[in-house]
Image (tube, rainbow, N blue to C red):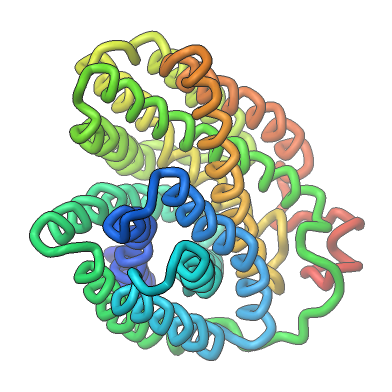
Length: 403
């Protein structure tokens, strides 16, 4: 059904394709910032500080920017964010060595804070353009296509820094970002929601959305645990520089399963989510069992990745039901913020576990997170089954949601 929507609806197709191109430079940026810090002569603890500043500033500012999109409209907010982001990237590409560590952290934090909200905007737009019965499949397809970016983006960065340096890659990212964001805005210009006078407390006052963001937080921790544990396992085998290969196969497993899920599976997303998370926990246990040798690790990552895109797509399809339409961009921005927050916490916690116990402990941590998330999803199912919009009185009437 989801592929049929893309084939039949040119508006959805243009929006999806242009958003994927616009997200490519955003996917490339975190790794490039890390490599830039190393090229500038900073030690690894400082590199971690720079990377953390980028992720934290993005997570903190994403909900605020999403709220501004709902209040002021997509175009002015996106163009303002693009201007600030591009300026920060140009500073980083021009004089990184003269900034010092504090200056580098500050400019990187500005770049992270000003990240254009492409993810939130496209997902909010799909909620308005796609029939509710087809949303889960379309969001799963979108999550599957995004997995390709996590394979392609780091590869481009590796090639660019290998041939030239991180500064040159930043110039390419800045140019691609400007061109792709302008194309994306042109593709969706006639289909975005008008600005609304949205006031009151945060959309997180919706109990259902708060539970759903807890699921996103748990998965962010899981993603970081798998990422760090995979790198540590490869390093134990003397293959740290090749860690991108098994991680790329993780994304391939997600891509293939997402395409199959959209074709053969349908049903109520609220009912499906707990089962998908339990399947993710099971596949993570398989990964924890296999994650000792390089080949078994790669096989385990493909199996674990098979649960990722269907689960994420199902979660995205529940956001409109949990938040209502008036705050939908802010709601999607909150989901991104919780994933990033979970990833930051998960990376730190996994590092401590691996230093104390070893790489397999990271995979065990990854297996526990979907179990916790499944418990939240069961509570969420009881609230959302049979409803198009969460009517939680805590968050609806007081926060200006659709009644």
